[in-house]
Structures are given as structure tokens and as C-alpha cells.
Length: 132
Image (cartoon, rainbow, N blue to C red; front, side, top):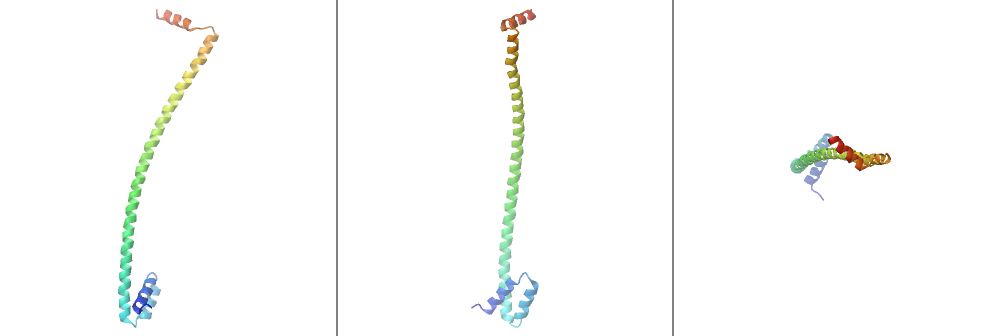
């Protein structure tokens, strides 16, 4: 069975967030000054310990938040670098595709010339004649 001091301390801690309950506990045990003061001291120590722990946890959470924000900035920079690389590769691919299209036109043109009885020999003879 808990002592009167322990009972008062528990009730004080339970009522810590509600001023009306806190006042009721103080009125209820006001006649027992010794146990009340000891309970107040014990509750204050427990609350101080709890607040210290919460403060430490808060600082750790803030530190973790800053670290995550830094990781996010690095990731965003990496993403921007990758997107820039992708844009460059897309331009290169477009240029390669255009050259491929041009090269695919050569056989079509050669077939047209072959249909018109145009041969490589005639091309060389014409080129030779134009250079003289």
C-alpha cells in the first residue's frame, strides 16, 4: 500500500496538466503539510527528470531533422545532376536518330539511281569529269 506522500505525488502528477484538478489535490491534502510538501518535492523532481528527458529527445529529434534535411539537399542536387545528364543523353539520342534517318535514306536514293540505270562507275566518271 502506498504511503500518503506517494499517493499525493501520484495525484499531483496525474493533475499536472489540469489546474482545477491540481487545486483540488492541494485543497484535499492541505491539512497534511509534511506529506504534501514531500509529495510536491517528489513530483517536482519527477517532472524535472521527465522534462530533461523530453528536452534531450527534442534536441536529438532536431539534430536528426537537420541531418535528414542535409541528406534531402544532397539528394535533390544529385537528382538535378542526373536530370541534366538525362537531358544531355536525350539530345545525343536525338542527334543519333537523325543521323540514322539520313543513313537510311541512302539505300533508298541508291535504289532510285539504280532504277534509272545510274551506276557507281557513272558517278566516278562524272566526278572525274567535274574535277578536270
